[in-house]
Amino acid sequence: MTDSSVLSYSGVTDLGGGKAYALHNVFELDGRISAYPKSARGFAPSNCYLLCEDDGAILLDTGYNGHKHALFEQIGSIITPDTPLSIYPLRLNEFMSVGNAAALAREFNVVECFARRPDMDFWLDFDVEKFGPKSEAEQIFPTTVLGNELECRVGGNENRVISGINAPIRLITTMWIYDEATRTLFSSDMFSHIWGDDPEGPWAVEEDSVTTPEFVRSFLLNTRYWWLEGVDTGHVRKGIADVYDSYDIENIAPGYGAILMGRELVERQFSVLDEVLRDLDRSVVDPRYVPRDMER
Image 1 (cartoon, rainbow, N blue to C red):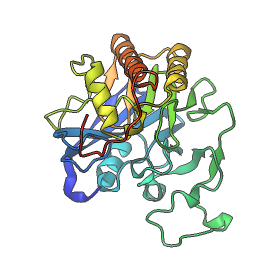
Image 2: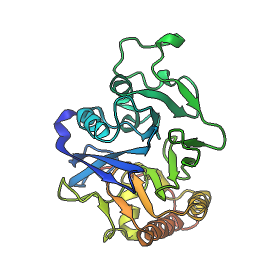
Image 3: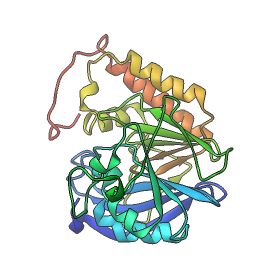
Image 4: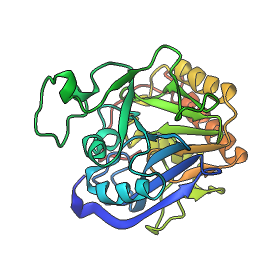
C-alpha cells in the first residue's frame, strides 16, 4: 500500500469497558486493494485491535506501513511506552498484519510475539538494518510459541484468556481470535464486506443493509475467495458452524471494514455465509476460475 492512498482520517473504537479497542486507519477504494472487488469505490478502514489489562496489552496485527504514525498515536493514547506489549499477527505473510512490527518494537515495550512457529525475526524483519539469522542478543521479537490449545493471556490476568482459532475459511494461514471479555470474534479477512462513502465511517455498526446472499457471494468470489465456486464446501461450513456454536459471539471485528455489533447482526452474518457456501458447493455448481476483472 503506497502513501498516496493513505488518508488522514483515523479513529479508535472502544469495544467494551476499556478491555479492547479497534484502531481504524482508512484507505480509499480505487481498485488496488485486493481485499475488495476491483469496482468497489468509497472508503474502508484497516483495523488493528488492542486488547488491554492494567499490566499488559496484546496488539492483533500491526497495520500498513503507510499508517504507521497514526497507528502509533492511537496506541500511545491507550497505553504508556513502558506497558508490556505483545504482538499477535493473524496472517504472517500479509503486510497488513506484519508491516509495522519492527517499528513498533522501537517505539513501545514489545516483550513477545505470539506465533505457531519459533524465530519470529525471520518473519518480521521489515525496516531493520540487519537481515538474516540473528544471535539471541540481536533478536527483536522474543517468540512465545502457542501450543495446540492456542490460548494466551492478556497481561498477567489469569482470567483474561483469549482463544486462537485456525480460521475455518482462508486463502493463506490465518488465525481468528475470540475474546470472552468483550464477546468479540476477531475475524481477520472474513466478514469484511461492509465499506462506506464517508472516510469517517461509522466503522462500528448495529444495522446492515448489504448482507444478502447475492452480495456476499459476489464479494467473496471477486476478492481472495475466488476459488470457492464448485469446491467441496462441506468441511468449511462445518468449521464455521463449530466456531459459531462454541463461542458466545456478540461482535464481529474484521481486519478490514466495519465492525458488526450485536447478536442479531452476528447471527445474520453467519447465516448468510452458510447459505452462500451451501450454494457454491460442487454438488450445486461446477468449478471455474474467473479473472478478477470479470466480476460475478
